Length: 102
Image (tube, rainbow, N blue to C red; front, side):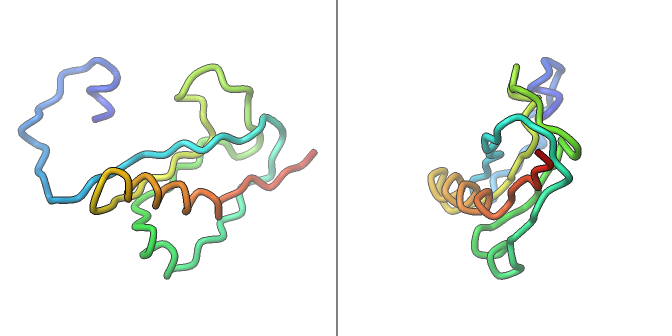
């Protein structure tokens, strides 16, 4: 879907419904210098919150946000419903915090 979000052609027939919903949650973090991230999720929590992928885009600093793509962290989760997938992501994101330098 990245191609689609960039305005490129996408073959929708490649999407297969598996009865689950997914979200890519982008938590807000204040701008500033960081020294990586504290990942506080246990394996049990990863399963409970159905965490599929964590993308860290910032490793040394979090810039003032100018657009969605500039966000420093993306949390991808799934759930039985859209709401459950979103709540899973929000709960998981609470355990992933920047290690502040300032």
